Amino acid sequence: MGGVSASEKHFRKEVPLADDERLEQLCGDVPRRVREGELGGAVLDVLVKEAGSPTARRRRAALAALSAVLRPGVALPKQTTEVLRAALLGEDRVARQNAAQAARALPAADLVALVPALEQA
Image (tube, rainbow, N blue to C red):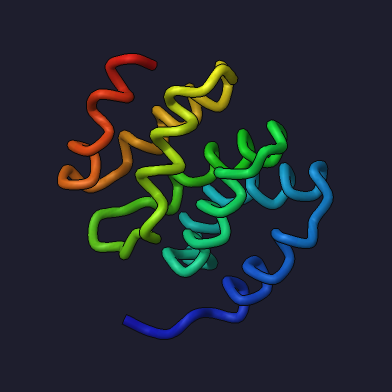
């Protein structure tokens, strides 16, 4: 397994500085960039951080992008399940849907921790 690509480094620097509209664009492009091998698990930390954002637009965009990056064998940031659990139990319907989609991509061992929250969502 190689190191962090230049694209991943740039993404990790750009996301926290992006305004809400630019963040939505960046996150919307994540599935394609993952398919093309441009982005991988190295961007999970920044997506998980944004998924816990108090700003609905940022939270929704990051949660939607997470499912493209979550793969078996990819090391999850420590707070991943906590962020997903909070979104699943939150008031924001779109964030709950996006979190449920992301949770489906989790490895089974991590998904087990979210079952109660998924049942309530």
